[in-house]
Image 1 (cartoon, rainbow, N blue to C red):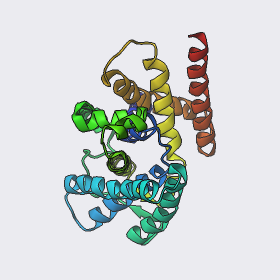
Image 2 (cartoon, rainbow, N blue to C red):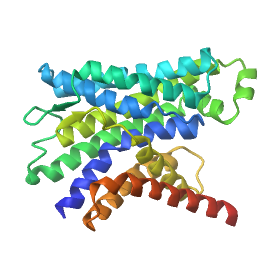
Image 3 (tube, rainbow, N blue to C red):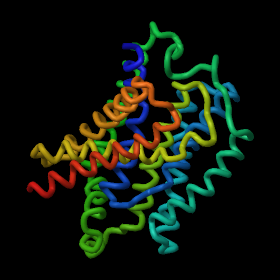
Length: 287
């Protein structure tokens, strides 16, 4: 039971990642690969802050503007230099590998014994208390994102992703909206990297490799479910993404519980994404 409770806790830590990818992939229709680098960036910044004896809450809040800066760079390259969004993300992700190494000064930083937002994460007795803390953080982040998407700026972001030419004809600066949107997306991804680092007790330079798959899986799973409901607001898609992020980690936990080696986890993650993409396509064909 504790094994799946721990997977639930990890799933909650991956919710900001899923929401960030939802913002870039579904609201803006931009395949942003920067997330692989900004996820590790959040972990690296938090780890270094902890070594400097900073309060964990301050360190957690600090990773968001740092992650936002990485996303803004991708947005600037895409909009100002007219580079394909996918290539811009790959370029920044590649650069962030060196930036993260420069920040960490080594490939791995252990954080066992250092303070965090969670209470004695290695003590099973505190597991459900930590789930409550993580759930509160997820609720706050989800509500803030929902509020943002309902504001005039949020509506402009959604319109820019749906019909960029139309919103430009109305005098809206879509380049600025894309830059800010990618900044918010990567701020959420960096927050996720920070939370996972606090749970696992270390930051590693390679922890972000392929992490976009986990976010995409959550988005695809959430999309396939939300299509079955009639909704006119962003609340249902956001809730489905949140639930899918948790379910995805529980699926991974189930796979590991069957004795599958850790080396095959990313393979099964990719297969889960393909599975839910297939479910989405089947639903589309039926309609």
